[in-house]
Length: 223
Image (cartoon, rainbow, N blue to C red; front, side):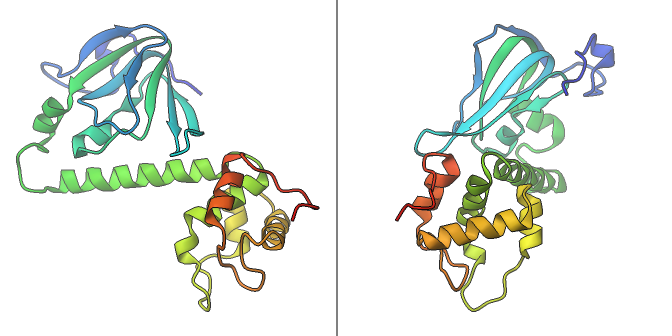
């Protein structure tokens, strides 16, 4: 659910005192504020409007889409010199407050100093944000697509001869499906030689990736 617009600077959730680093900018629907894979020069605080966040994989297929509204902060990855994980597009006329990443880094002690607790913590926060986005992505699509994405993303944890780090119940809960649905998908993948039949081992990561993107669906009679 989108929050209410910020009516005035006095009601701003940033809670800044003194001269504000951020400058108000009106942006029209259809504008692009950031591009996936590029390091932004700005940090944005959404005062009003609706923005869409989208990402694509190497094949050009959309893998994540969500919306953000008032009181959202975008572009924090620029403070750590990381590329944007999203393309940010204005879906409805918006008002955003923007400050350069350099200004924000200077004001928070991130600029030009040895690594501090603030900079270390920011890196961890961004890592956790990325992990949360990946988890959300795992719950998108059909049950088979969710299982396929999980197998591709976590295949390095599936070492033959070693006990799994997670149970089927845990994985099913993560994917938002029933344990028996997970078992059925695994059996189907084994039948089509995408994973091992006797042990959980990925044999065809590319094939699983296609299923995860929704580009391919298995049928019972397919060989």
